[in-house]
Image (cartoon, rainbow, N blue to C red):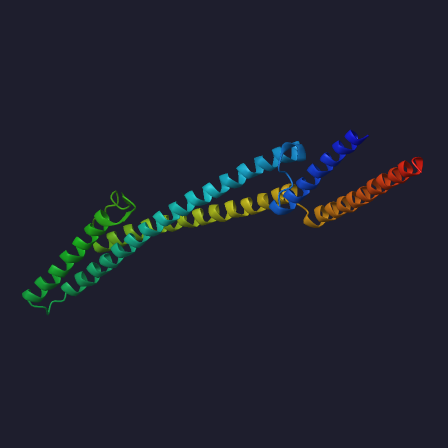
Length: 222
């Protein structure tokens, strides 16, 4: 009987330690024995959550790339607008030849600025405007840059939508995983308290049995 009691106490101690561990960690699925199917589902959800987080990071990097590209295009648009304004002023018949030359020099500088934007705007080590070229009249250049910015804006909006969709998916999956794997602290604490009360009662009964046996043995030798 003592051996059986020892085994029972050992199992009870293990159970109590398991409850302590679940309360401390907040995870009720610490091993497969705690719920094999629930653990498999929880691990699958964890993979889904990490996949969504990775997708968010990728989309965030793509968005940053598009933002840098848009900044470069905005600079090109400013230069193109400047060239357009100077070209209109240059057509004024009251200007002297030196005035027109000065304006032309400024137009050339703006043109060089556009070239600098295409060759120097980069994200990390990637030159984001290296394949974008503008040509034609000032109005043509403005139209080309505006069209490119519209395309960038559409891509950025799409990336923002993807980021938010991934966030919502990860949040929902995390909530579902929590319902499966998180410890119900109040319930676990109640179970632990019941086990402690039971253990105290068993200890008390064992002590009483020992005292009764001792009394019986004393009575035999009187």
